[in-house]
Length: 424
Image (tube, rainbow, N blue to C red; front, side, top):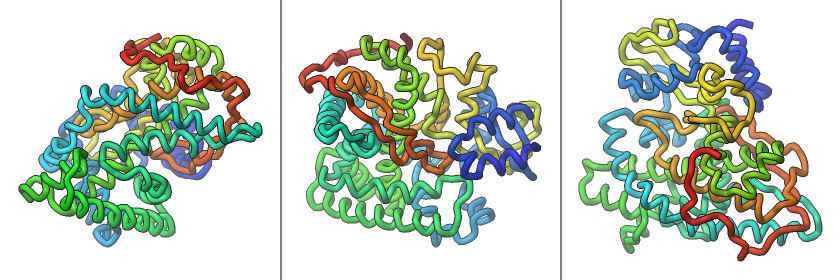
């Protein structure tokens, strides 16, 4: 199987559901693999980390989109993503990112721990109530989605009653992040983008009438106070991306991570008894089954990585999930090991586009996993679950679980508010 065949397998339904065997086939060709004219795949950890930090690489700009995606401006989904900080280069990227960064400062995130704990406890109560007859519950619908969506909606100032709207809209929109997308999938993505933009258009109008202490108000004021700081398109596009990115990645981390923990009962038992080890567990879960599997970069100058010359204009797919399992960086990389030292997963990227909400996602997972294991000691998978046929955002559509008969009361909290530590 040559690199082009391996890429075709990776993009097939089978390859998207389980990309790891294909990553290993690609790794056999080296850490940077040419898969087409001026098109390369990156599987090596060191190479991926360096490329993401290298100023000679950027995301696709408007000129390149015109070349590779003619008519992209007519797609609400592509246009929304392209006008956000997710798909812009400096100085526009830096300008937009600074406006939102304050909401995700380490101090502000740490202050949200009590809120996250309370919300997680409430969701566990709901799981127990729905499972009283012994029937399985869908962990994705009952916990993995509502926890992060509640947190990001609180930051943005989205009313709690509107939270259920976003799951379908976001699922539809994020299809546009895949390396390939069919016309039908693009139509769904456009529908999701349109509905999200319409929603935020109304929310922006509401915040102009009645400002609040939330991120939406801050971005509206940045736009209205000085249009050079944030254009109208940028305002709506960044609100859409902040909402979607604010829960999609964390939802996948919670679903993927729970499956790994329940497949490793000894490690799960340790975390149940020692919640202070949660930071190290979460880092290894991010490495082992990354909720984001890839990102892309374009070279703006000739470079050389992994023994391969990369001319200016080269397009690289950086396979984060492959880099996280590079045996040259992590011995026995296919083994889940929460005791592994010095884990620095690339799941949230690196460099200028490092995920703005990475700290918030980590906090939610560090709170959620010990709480679930402690309050639901009989928690078990009730089936294999349904994987989404996606490569970029790896996660479950459904994940049936049973909660057991030994659920502890909500007042039995054991996660210390100041729990720290990076490894067990």
